[in-house]
Amino acid sequence: MTFNTEERYTQLTSASLKRKSSTEGSLAPPSKQTKLWETQRVSQASVDKVVLKFIVQGLHPPHVVQQQGFIDLVQHLRPNTNVMTRNTVVNKVTKASIEMRRKLKAALSEIEFIATTTDCWTAHRHSFIGVTAHWFNPQTLQRSCAALACKQLKGSHTFSALAGALNDIHTEFNIREKIVRTTTDNGSNFLKAFRIYGQTDENNNPEPVGESDGEEDDGGQNDDDDEEESVEGVEFVDAGALLDEDDYLEYQLPKHHRCACHLLNLVSTVDALKAEVNPLYKRVSRSTFAKCSSLWNKSSRSTTASEVIEDHCKLQFLRPVATRWNSLFSAVERIVRLTREQGEGALAAVCSELDTPKFTPVELAFLAEYAKTMSPVAKALDVLQGETSVQMGWLVPTITLLRTKLQQLNIASKFCEPLIAALLSGLEKRFGEMLTDPELIAAAILVPKFKTCWTSDENIFKLGLDYIRNHLDCQAENHISEGSQSSEEEDFFSSLKKTSPLETTQQLDAYLGCPRDTVEVLKSFPAVCQLSLKLNMALPASAACERLFTVAGLIFRPKRAHTGSKNFENQLLLRLNKAYW
Image (cartoon, rainbow, N blue to C red):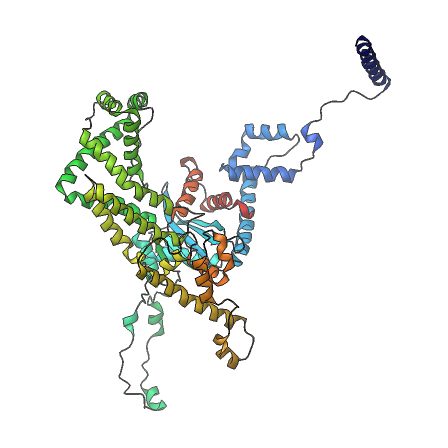
């Protein structure tokens, strides 16, 4: 063992001496650690590109490049680099925006059906109209989206001004004939714009404008008059006066859909107030919410009150906001949660220290039942305001299931029976026509997740299935007429030809009988898939446009309120459409 150790030591020391002698004999200087910019040469163009992305993705103002700290940072990472000026940044943002729009237009030109959402937004005495586009990838059947515009609106937001702005945006991107539906809130100006200039009214029923303005029927008395007599009977009118008349043909808008989340919010706020017709509910409700409002006001206006609440409850109260969906439910749910987790004593201690009225056991029980009653409404609203996974076909099953849940809660309700009755009445008032709309029912059936499992009403299913069969037949005839290159005489009988080995009706029956419920199942039934994509293209809510305005608010801050509307829109669209530049 000793011999092996000594031999190993001799080998190691001799190797060390050899390395030392070889190092001393060489004339090369000792190696140093290689710096980052020496291993990889970074061009000025690549630096400018990264800085531009930093500005756009970080929502920074262009003048940040002129701050000395930013200049020192860039030059420390890459010495001898020139940092762009503010004007250069603005010019590059403009060029990038033009390139982004070109790529987006090219992408939209390949899509057959498109849906849009739109809304108006006001900040710092400036008004804007935002538009987002949504479509399905034909290969993956996954939803894609893009922001089309956030243009400044000047003057009054009349229905004609909104229609003109929307028409210009649709024309700019060449999608006017591709839009299946546009989803907006329930503002009267939007409703009138689509009622007058749209293909259908807000209830999706044809409403021709000026239909009664036609000439009266003469009963066919002049049918046998000769040509000369008809010429003599011509009445000459001033063409200029006719051109000045508004015939509502100036703009062309697509079908309209009212935002389902906005309607649900109206149900849970405006319609829910009708429950106070019941005197007992009115007394308990007003007493309870008066004490809640006192707590919410104290917690939001005083730092001392916030500290007291934090000490006793370990969480803060939430304050309702009138313009925010589900805010009242979230605020009540927070009080119920704190009471359940920390006990009624913690809430009583907070009320004592803040000098607010204490809750009685009946009022606490009312709050718990109120939160339980409104929970299905809040969950339905959260479902419908989705964007990537939600389709128009989710609307009818969601509202149908919501009504069922409320009816089940009514059985065991102690305090909130009037509230449940008011909610059900509001749902019928605001969603009644949608729940019997054949197109919306068909859209639900063509969602593999639902098919026919969301209701047991056979009449409802019949409306949807009849709509699907009729449109599948029309779709097949259009496909034949477009693909046929034969003579007009053969085209007349083209409807007798079969579209494929598996006819459209057989495809529908096979789809309904398929046990799979994933989106990929649609690929096995091409005709059904095409109709499903068209009917489910639109979104049931306009929340996507609200998200656009959320990002816009991060750019259009008080200190940047004088930013040019075009520069603001360019930076916003680049931020939201980063996949296209």
